[in-house]
Image (cartoon, rainbow, N blue to C red; front, top):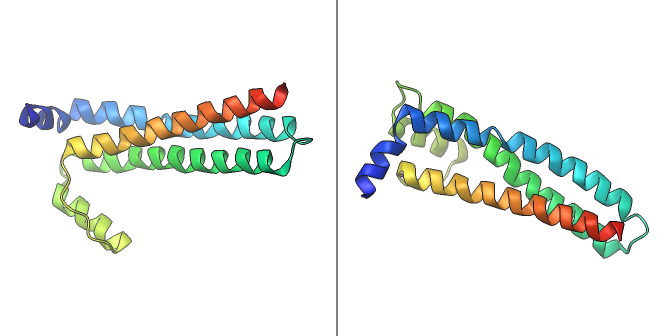
Length: 135
């Protein structure tokens, strides 16, 4: 089953799907910024701890959302027909200077899925803080 999954995830169709979904990261970041501004404005009279919480959740959400958007471009490169996966991994190793083990496509997809979930969870938490500040 794992081999079949890996073969499907290596297809160009799967590549187009993950690229499209990762493109959503910039919209998560945009909505997160709007919610942060609204939360900040609604919590101006609140204590400092609540404002710090709003900013912390905003920053965590932004990091996840922009990382998802970065993954869009990395997946575009990875799914290029002429791309060698080992060259891709070596380029990342050379850029960041830390050893990157060979990853399967399923592992790469799972990492991106976790980032998407964290970004959406952060956005949900931001909306909750906004609603809490309004009442």
